[in-house]
Amino acid sequence: MKVAELLLNTVFASLIAGAAYADTPPKRSRDFQGSYQTLVKDQHASPRIADCIATGYDLVKMSRIFDRLGFTEEDIGKARTVRKMGPFSDRDATKISSVISVAGQARPRANSTNWADITLRCGIVRGRIKAIEIKPAAK
Image 1 (cartoon, helix red, strand yellow):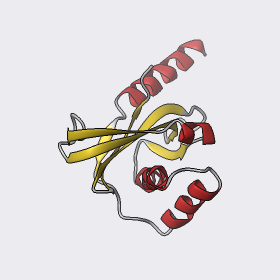
Image 2 (cartoon, helix red, strand yellow; image 1 turned 30 degrees about the vertical axis):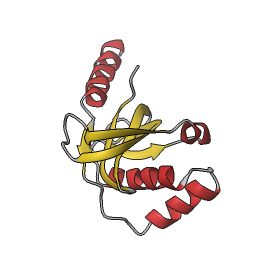
Image 3 (cartoon, helix red, strand yellow; image 1 turned 120 degrees about the vertical axis):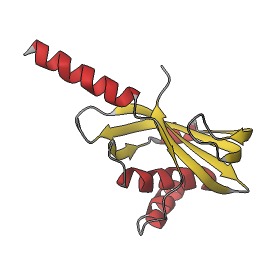
């Protein structure tokens, strides 16, 4: 039993380690506006942070790695916006002017009982999200 558990944990860890991916923002879903309003009104997110997280919710709907994102009010309060002129990331050369980073958790499709710590990053140009990425949180 312990060998199977160790093997499962190893597979899960490798899945998460390789899970970072950058992508173009998805088309807004029908749920986007409701998610955005909940983030602004109930979780007191700024409009930019709410836009990033709601876009992340739409992105994860299409993900083969994760099926759900979770952010606490504390996570949202600690979100940062950093001015960064240049490419969004090593994997995405989209030119951006700032990056929003929000720590949170994501539930892997393969092992839905173990949520993983992640960072949601959104690349911004003239107030619009041009790139988005979900990556494992730095330890």
